[in-house]
Length: 223
Image (cartoon, rainbow, N blue to C red; front, top):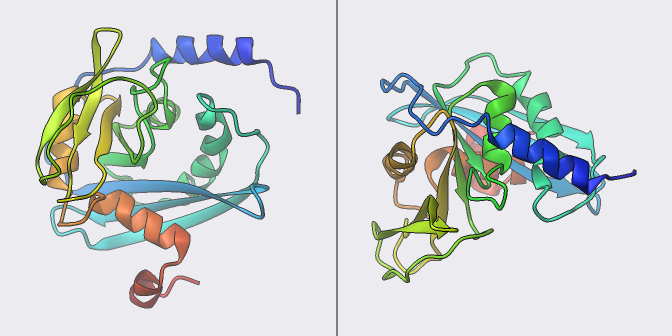
């Protein structure tokens, strides 16, 4: 597959200009979604999982897994092009659309301000939040490994997200708005979705369903 990075970079910059970093969603959240993407068969198959949960009790309403042939190579900074086709395939199966979608990955905490949460938010016209396990770019002040500690993530003198210590003695999460969500609300809603684990419930469930983990296989009867 021929990849024109200059063209993709231009596309990212154009899309990033369409991202809204203001709250444009109903604050009375009743359904919250979570997504996770992984790869199988040495990367030849992209696996995307989407789960829809009630809020605030986080009961599973529905979940879907889509597996597609991987068409885009692994290129750091351009991973959303690799991941979004399978996410769209999974999304097409969703019957109960969530009020807010938490995405495993970056939102605007990306060199060109277009991580998968922002890219997906634009494609779906959905309010999205990026919940990443690793930093892609930006700098931050060290924080104690005590749950609830938080500090801004800054790049080029601009806040692009938050570094959140979601659980004691764990690596922090990197939270950033994706689309139609403000910086403050991104942090607020991820915090609201924490239930004592490192990951907030929507992406924790999506990860578990995608990975077919024993506890969730038993509780959800995932095939």
